[in-house]
Figure 1 (cartoon, rainbow, N blue to C red):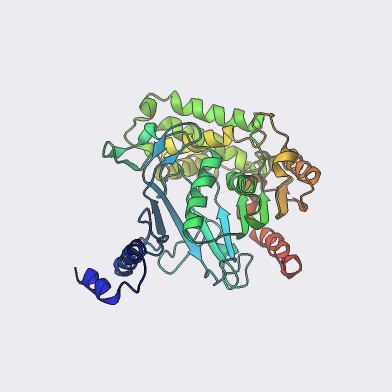
Figure 2 (cartoon, rainbow, N blue to C red):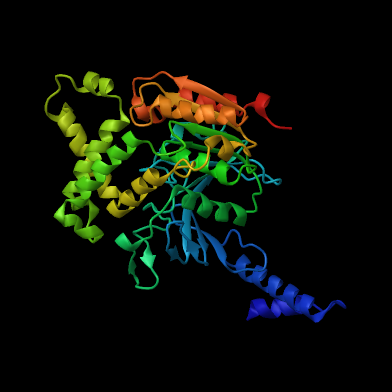
Length: 409
C-alpha cells in the first residue's frame, strides 16, 4: 500500500489522454514494486518474465507463458537457470553465450558465491579466452536438463509432482528458442558470439540457422549439423540398455543412482569420449584401483548419482533428431546462406564421437553458402574430451579468432 500511495502522489494527469495516464500509472507502479524485490529484469508493461538470484549465485529466469515444443506438448512456466561472468556494456553488444555439452551445466567457471571449479574454468577470466574484462558471458542450462532449467525433474504445476517421463520431447531448436526468450528479455539485440562444444555446438550452429544475423561470431568445437548413423547407433545402444532395466520402470523409477542399466549405458558412453589408443596407453597392465574396470565403474556411478536418467534420455534423443537439413529436404548450403557471422570450426583428429569427416561436411556446406569460415584440425590423443583437457590450445583458438583483427567495425 505504501508503494501504491507513493506512485499516486508522484503522478498527475499532465493533460494527457486518460488511457495514456493509466498506462503510465501501471508501469510506474510495477517499477516501484519490482524495485523492492530481487528481480533483475522485467520487460516493460508485462509481468510475464522474472529473473531472480538463487542462493548459489546462479540466476533463474521464469517466463510465465506457455512454451510449445516442436514435437508437441507445452509447459508453463518456462524456467532457465544460468550463470554470468563479466558485465553487460551499455550498448549490450558484448554478450557471448557458451553452450554446454550433454552432461555439464551452466556452471562454466568458479565464482565468489559458487567457488567449486566449473567445467571450463581455465577459459574464463580477465585476459583469458573468454575475457571478463571485455565480454559478458552467459552459460544457460539447457532445456530438458536437470540442473535447474525446465526438465523431467521439474514440478508439473498441473499435478504438483515432477514431470518425469511425461516431460515433452525436446529438440535442439527448442533449446535455442527457449534461450532466445531469455536473451530478448535481457534486451540483447545481437550477441557478440555463440560458442559451443559437442552437443553445445549443435545449439550454437542452430542459433545462427534460426537467427542468422544475431551474432558476430560462431565457434563450433567437435560437433556437426545433423545426427550421423554411427552416433545414433551409440545412443541407441545406451537407450536400450537403460530401458531394458526393470527398475527403469518406463521412466518411473525411485532414484537414477540405483539404475544398473543407466550405469552400464554411461560406461558405454565414456568409451567414446576418449580415443581408444589413449585408453590403451593409460590402462595397459593396470590392475585394481588403477584398472579401466575401476575407472568406468567409479565415473559411471559418480555421473548417475548427479544426473537424472529421464533428462539423459531426453537430451540424447535431441541429438538424434537434430538435422538442419530436415532429413535431406533442405540443402545445408541454403540453410547457412543467410548467416552473417564469421565462423570457426575446430575438429579433433582423434575424436571417435564427432569425427573429423562430420566437421568437414559442415565446413564444406558453409563454404558453399559463402559464409566466412575458418577450419582448424587440432591434433590430440585425448579424443572428444580434448576441449576439456587442452584448454590452453583451445583458448588460443578462441582468443585469436575473436581478437582485434577480427573485430567488426
